[in-house]
Image (cartoon, rainbow, N blue to C red):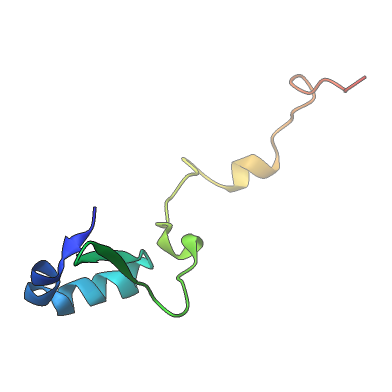
Length: 75
């Protein structure tokens, strides 16, 4: 959804900071035309990932896991 020039004027610094943080472009509609503001160097999508703790328990237990009963060779 595009913003109007009036909405941009009201919140320009907040909106510009949001563009820099997310890397997502902002569309503005003015006189029936659409304008786009976007960062010169787009932010990597990987930068938006949040660090998560996905291993529940002791990571050392994974090292000694025996998968022979689960593994089936591809024929």
